[in-house]
Length: 181
Image (tube, rainbow, N blue to C red; front, side, top):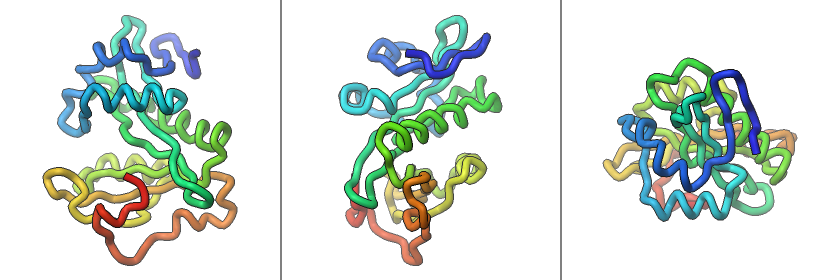
């Protein structure tokens, strides 16, 4: 099933075969990588949230992995990973991938918001997410394995009429205080 196609790029559902062709993307220092069972879990539980951008020569240009979680007013889409290979950046691929995840959250799952975690030091990504309409909801102290803080960034979906899900918290939290892991 193809969601988006141009002359040079196809965005389609991520498959298990793609796990053998995305090294050019995952070798980037800013990309968090996971073990094989982690990717398989996402592909089986939330396939609608797993998309890849593929070039005309079948090279992986980037991908997004996400999931839906929570309950009641915390029901939301979560961006686990979105990354584009360095040689394909500045082509709006990340924005297209994010838009697909947001559309699934809104139209398939009727979520209240989309959230993601980003390293506090990754100013380029933070700026990109802000451009896409995300804002910093809270800081999670020592979230990453190297003890770096994360920003929990959120974007309200139309279901959140009062945009309560994106009202920033005043105090940072610890990872064990997160509602979802």
